[in-house]
Length: 217
Image (cartoon, rainbow, N blue to C red):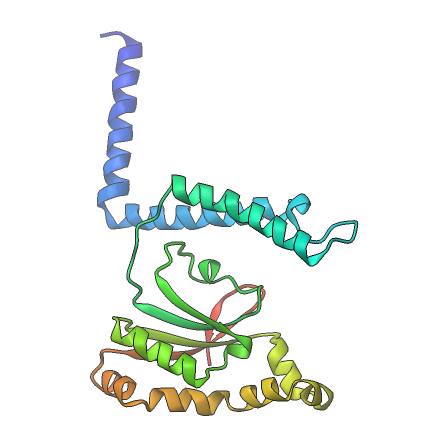
């Protein structure tokens, strides 16, 4: 047998072993998850420097121009999604996250599979509607609810400033009532009964805005 054939057979066998390891072992699947997250992170970094796709330009543009650009970007993104469809998944986790654009829930978990219900509000403040949405999510199978705050929160700063409170009284009042709203949600009969039965966990977390690291609070 020639040396070239031996090398080829060895390469095929090695690739086969790697494929089996990646597909059928716990460490291999973990590697897939990490590499997938890293590739998405790389994609974010590649796009980050593309100033020609920013909505801010050297010349002034109108709101309608911004809308047209957003439609163009959506068309590109939707074409990719149609070409590479994702597997539909039923979330077991619901997260309440501030509307601050610096917090990316995909990067927060390193998981791009849309495996989460996400509620985004200013200051992560619940209203009666959000309480009901979370209860409905729990009824549909959610087993973990994460109620978050984050560092350098504009809503919290507004609530802490007398001048800003005068300008944004409803927002400030909502931040003041955040803890009461959380307690109100956890006291809802359907939620409290699942917590008592060990079928639901509700965690209070704080997110480091710059690193997106989850910290207890």
